[in-house]
Image 1 (cartoon, one colour):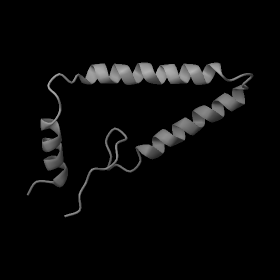
Image 2 (cartoon, helix red, strand yellow; image 1 turned 60 degrees about the vertical axis):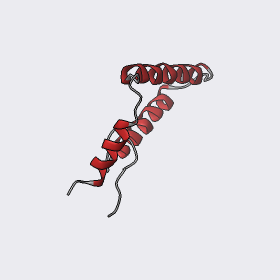
Image 3 (cartoon, one colour; image 1 turned 180 degrees about the vertical axis):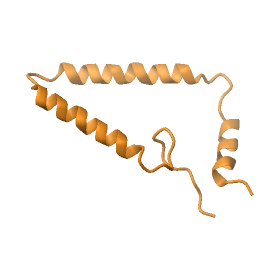
Image 4 (tube, helix red, strand yellow; image 1 turned 180 degrees about the horizontal axis):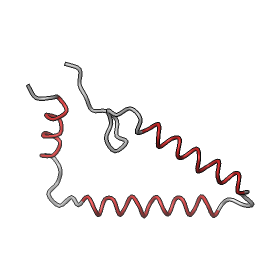
Length: 83
């Protein structure tokens, strides 16, 4: 008996366009993220070191919580069906 996730992945991969490039997708997401961060950072004024550390700490906690469930891969929602 195959796992429902494996069946979903097999169906999903057949629908991906042949010209899709994961590296181009990742590059676009990276450039977009850097642009958003730059715009957000340029709109701030007089941030103290403590405030910067608090932001970094909050991001680290968020990322750790996201990877903590062990059911997800790459911070994607779990795609499991209950049989």
